[in-house]
Image (cartoon, rainbow, N blue to C red; front, side, top):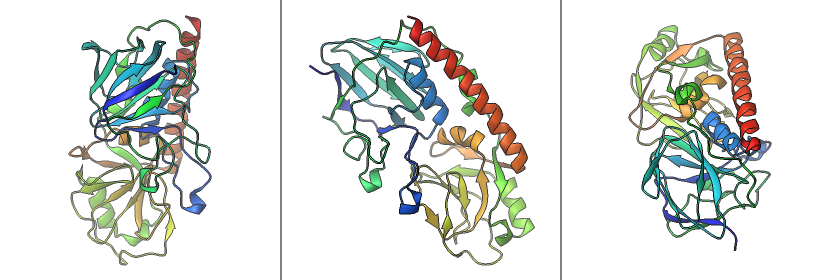
Amino acid sequence: MANGFDVLTPGVYTTLQDAGRFGFEDRGVPPSGAMDEMSFAIANALVGNTEAMGALEFTLTGATLRLTGNASCRFAVTGDMHMTLDDVALPPYCRHRMQPGSTLRVIRARSGYLAVAGGFAIAPVMGSVSTLARAALGGFNGRPLQKGDWLTLAATQHAGPPTDSLPVQQLMPQRERRPIRVVAGPQQTHFSPAGVASFLAGEYRVSGESDRMGYRLSGPPVPHLQGFNIVSDAIYRGSIQIPGNGQPIIAMNDRQTTGGYPRIATVIRADLARLGQQKPGDSLRFELVSVEKAESLWIGRHQHLQSWLAELREVAQLG
């Protein structure tokens, strides 16, 4: 009998995600993938998986899952999480073992990830298992998990013994309390210098209308200099559009691939994982950096992450 998770409660919005579905934006298909790529990659490394293997992504609240089958499984949960296994509290950023019949309850999450050794038995669509719910594409039947679903696990990989807690603060630069860093434009000339200055000085809150497609912000409106309609242009993750009401919208993983609102700035790659941990009601500020600074920050962060992942995989293979 294959191992699997019975979904007892699905949480607010739990989907299967991997590193993303790339190469199809010219056909209108966004990459999707993990909102917090750092926590996602660390969860996989903890159980000995490749960095890009599919994992469950929790939003705001997690799921309650019961393991069925004949074998135990190794799992790890990362992100800003609280959870219990058979009503016993477990720390995140550790590798744990789950026995058949046991119940894992994820009590709270911003963006959190559950990886299991060997991954999930889900066929990729267009090269990825990431869920794009608005197109019913990928993941588990193209949608978030629902109560009563049964999610099959792939053949178990060896993942060593349980690990001690890892230094969570070190592993979560997303917890940095500093402005989200951006580079200018590419349509910054559609705004006056005073408008740009107001945007950078303002404090914005993540609206309850935000989702994986985009974060809608509320705060000081940004006036347009030349109107708010432009010829449709490519939209990237982190693009900050200013529509007619002047309230910024940050394009996220399930975004449309083109848009007709001018973009005042773009979030740098090094801060996208931190952005992915934001929830409705959180406040945001922005800080302008040069392209050269943005590249330097990403290179440093990526190298540091790869070093962590290599160490975690080595430990996972030793037990």
